Image 1: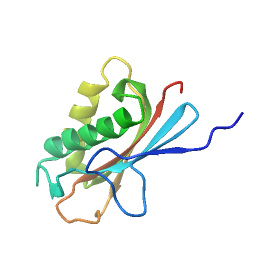
Image 2: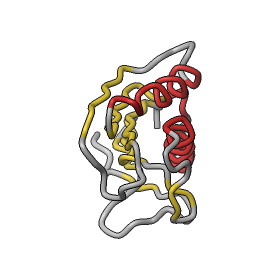
Image 3: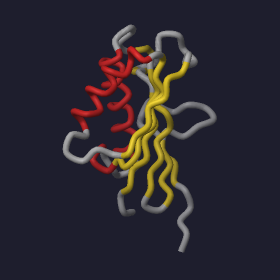
Image 4: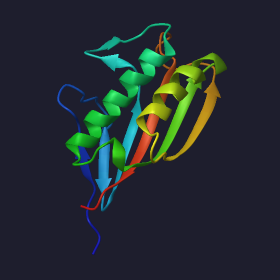
Amino acid sequence: MTKSPQRFDPPGAKFTGMSQAIRTGDFITVSGQVALKDGKVVGVGDPKAQAEQCFANIAAALKEAGAGLSDVINLRCYLVGQNSYAGYGAVKNELFKDNPPCSTAVIISALLLPDLLMEVEAVAWRPA
């Protein structure tokens, strides 16, 4: 039996034209999250602070879908410049020290807002 996708948006995080997370069966895909809180960029110039906010946003989307960071099986991060990796890596390694997911990091030239240093996508697995 195939289940229809369910869309999830944490309170205050609804964007036109996209869902923050979609559950299909046991898999939850979280849209790329950036360091935005209440519509403002968090941690301008600080990769670690931005990574912390990205993961907080991922955790909020997963919570709405009935999952958590411990259910993450794959991460994809787009980093503006190599200098952003150390802060991202430190936060990722702390959050996933016991059971790290598969992950990819890609260096890019820019994101939609000039103060953003990264965007992080996640896939989680949690039985429905």
